[in-house]
Figure (cartoon, rainbow, N blue to C red):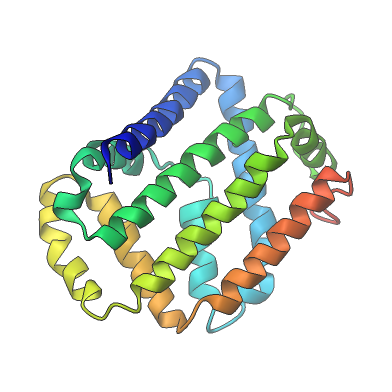
Length: 231
């Protein structure tokens, strides 16, 4: 990772911190952001109910929900990203560095879009019609397309990592140094992602389904067609 790339990622992580600071100063906004996140979690569970029921794909669907789509607080992981990015290559292999960079970009973009959507809402309970209206008011189709692309890139990167037989052992050996360096949350993400995608025995079909459904959903929302029967 060159210096300019590292600076760009640090700027994105700083933007997430800035978003959180604004939310902390406005409890109403923070509550609306959390409502958006929880709603998106329920939407993902519904959209991929078949994958959650699949022996082969349930783990990957859960990983995407918990690590990429869910309402979890990634503050600790973000702080670890920010701390490790300047010297990332000293601890992690190059392939892992690239995956971390993609994840950081995705998270920063998603946080910004969630905040923008929340600003379009009031205190009323969030339902399908209100979510769709906030989506259209937020707009930014290029950012939505990038959000999907980055999600797929993270999945593709994790899938490629599973083809490197020595990498899992390297990750295991890095566990103690990562913990000592205060990078436990980042280490957990990498190990969990590697194990989940290795168990899937090929992520091509899974990622193709995610791409198809997310693209269709975005197009439907921008056309004003809403989210079907999701409450």
